[in-house]
Amino acid sequence: MFFLLYYVFDFTYSFVKIHEMEKKYLGKTGIAVTPVGMGVLTIGHTQLDCPPDEGAAIVRHAIECGINFFDTAEFYQTYHYIDQAMKDLKSSFDSGALPRPVIASKSLACSYKEMQKAIEDCRAALDIDTIEIFLLHELMEEPDFEHRIGAWECLHDAKAKGQVRAIGISTHHADVALTAAGTPGMDIIFPLINYKGFGIRSGDGEGTREEMEGAIKAAAERGIGVFAMKVLCGGNFAAEYIEALDYAAALDGVQSIMLGMGCKRDVDDAVRYFSGSMPNDYKPDVDNKRMSIDKSDCIGCGACINKCTSNAISNDKTGSAEINTEKCIQCGYCVPVCPTRALIFL
Image (cartoon, rainbow, N blue to C red; front, side, top):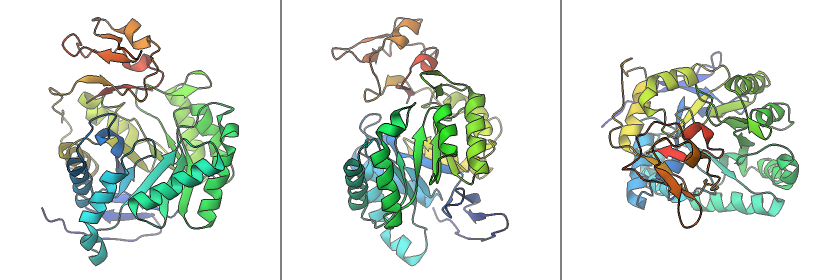
């Protein structure tokens, strides 16, 4: 399908129009992104485990449909999908027919050397000199930042060298996001937020939606760019697509929303919503979706097993949770009690 590309630069309102979606600048970084980005984790080996060509085709489709923002991570092992898609579209990038995508990656590194390697591996895997955004992955309650100060210092140095354009953190903790909002050198915060507040933490316990909203607002007031994750709660709010996205899209201080996309239909739905062409009564077809466990996140705590109303969840031989899809009634009661957000609906 052919899409007419057009750009309108307006520094008064700070946006660029493309494919009928406004591109907003992430805080003071100067990085312009579409209001929706593609979370590449969904097609990776811990979730859908798409074959390389199939996964690359989904990424390529997103770029061709006007999405210019992609979230990945060292831990996800999904660089190859993005790399192949960008190689496939090289002629379109070189001719200016399509803009090159903005890539946000992140690492669980603690030390300077670990982060240095993570950055170099990303640059090499994607064959790019400068990564637009690189973050400390999943920063948790204190003293996590203190333990990872070496990695943070490396990010600052990489930015000074031009290897990274903007740095920051991703987090599921409202208190951590608020602290980050006041941290010198913080360009970007990537927080967990959704309209039911599922998965938000604070300290070593549960946090509230209102706490995270306050942290996001504080960050935005300081010129920090904010893009949001888990607004569909790992697909668990898919049946409430419009309601969930209406909430997230209206959040004060959020410039873009990352959605996990596992097929071209997910891309098309996102583009329709954010370009304003989706009917208000739209309900996605979720008949073929099933509850599953991301084993890379599961810690085998048993919280979901205790909450399950249909005895559909048990422990496998490794101690991780597993779901009997024949017993599962997809009630969703297990989702909010999982401390690591390992329960996904795919």
